[in-house]
Image (cartoon, rainbow, N blue to C red; front, side, top):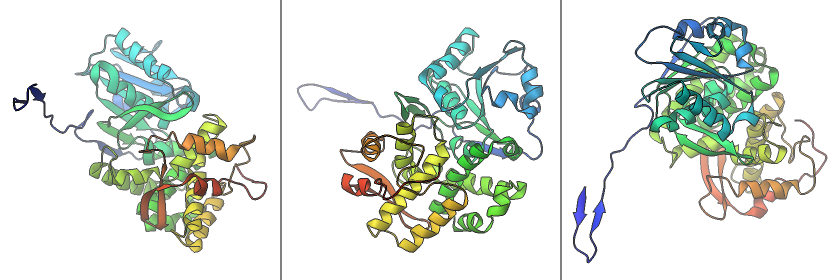
Amino acid sequence: MSILNDSPESEIRIVYPETHPGAAETRISFHAGAPDAAALYAPGSDGTRRRCFVTDATVATIPALERFIGAFDDGVCGGDILIILGSGEPYKTIDSVLTIIQTAIEAGFSRTDLFVGIGGGVICDLTGFAASLFKRGAPVHFVPTTLLAMVDASIGGKTGCDFNSYKNMIGAFYPAQEISIFPEFLQTLSDDQFRSGLAEALKTALLYDKELFGLFKDGAEKIKRRDPQTLFTIIQKCAQAKAAVVEQDFMEKGARMFLNFGHSFGHALETVAGLGAIAHGDAVAWGMGRALALCAKKEFCTERYKDEVFSVLKEYGWNTDAIPQSVIGGGIAERLLAVMHKDKKNQNSKIRLVLQRGINDTFTQEMEDADILAVLKPSARPSGI
């Protein structure tokens, strides 16, 4: 601290050290075989700290978690507690965050006790955000149960909730100490959930890994039938890529912004359709298509590259039209544009987008409204999601 006296009014300046809230590092472990949260955490066992486990009503019914859930009597097992929230995007609210915090306070938790999110991206985001707020920060672990959470949502410390129908408008950078990945969970997912996670994995391939993109192109049959070794390869490659980016740019001031490829369009679609009406991954896949359509139109990338990616999108059932059929009503393009203007990545009145010149060749640029509207105006009746 220094006190400056070179002006009529003194000034006090405090210099803070650089910190990483939540954890100094994140350890990601991969576990073969059937998921066993009971063996991993031994609820009710005497330990140095208590645990607040958070999951949702859908995850709580997975057979592999039966022994873990059954250990709790009315949400209590020894010094540990279990909170079961509603499932899906409609419950990704500040009220859910406060429910976690209130339950932990009423149970007498301290800031050294542990929060553990067991679930998909929504549960990881909510639990991490609650941990960041609880008594100014308590440690958090994640056990991701969806492909989307394994390849993206649980990694990197982005936590938060939706607000007033806008995606992730409240949140914090707060990484988990540990992430335990059981790929076997993926065999329990619905087709919609599985496809949603694949979209984020494809995004990672387009941004960082040509070999992974080749796997999406040439290994569709194995991916669709959920071949365990193929899925493990996808998860591991995505985790490694995101870990490298997050370590380089934790607070998303530079390179990490590329991870938002497809998200400005996709988040707007989720908002206009009504949060939860369209799976996040489906919206992101559509958003990547719109971003590449814009790139081709502006000659940032070739039509050949756009068509190559569109072919992969269609192979997995994603919409590549201007407006998905599931969104109805007048003025859709204008409504999408209005939401995109509220995107937290924008720095002024223009919309900043993540764009590509080609595979693994990515950049950000502010775009004119007219250029964005040009790829949101359907030229024919759309089809797909």
